[in-house]
Length: 112
Length: 113
Image (cartoon, rainbow over all chains, first blue to last red; front, side, top):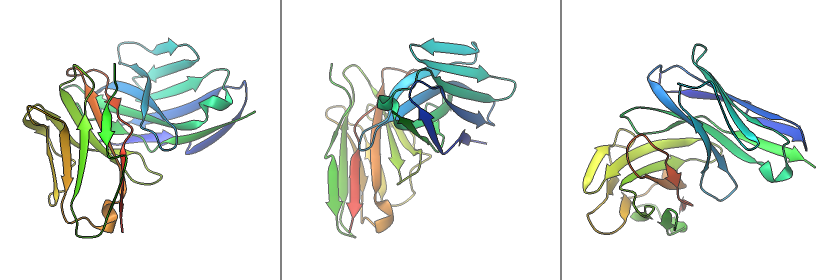
């Protein structure tokens, strides 16, 4: 019940296209859903996060869509650029628990 | 404002030795978390600490692993009698308070030979 399932494992998108990464969860107590970006040899960097009281959050080219009834959330990267090539992790936590439960990661490649 | 700092960045230990990983949280952050990342996998929670207290160690292996966050100084993750399976990247994160964003350090890559 603690799992967060992420798909796809890898994704190739042309420059200027839209990258979409999906995550699903089972634990209905989760109430915080961040996305992290990780470059090789670096630590994860917080990109954007959402709480269940909203269905969408946008920051620049990055958008989180959240579907509470389906227990799914997704990251959309608009106008994808080669510099966006990295591994992306979704995560979730429940209030009071603090620990983040991570998805398995998606390796995104943006072709120029 | 410096981010989360971890050292060493790379650590090589022989089987049976001890590994000590250090983490200094961001300024003003009093909550520290340790995660482990195996090659090609996501991050797994290990332990959550506040100053001088372990709050949640549900992800820590029962033996050989310990963590502390003293009143003064960095948080320490200690692995005794390391084995090859301990080879991984260990990340520390910190947050200012409860239920807010966690910011990660660059990690310590432990290799056990």
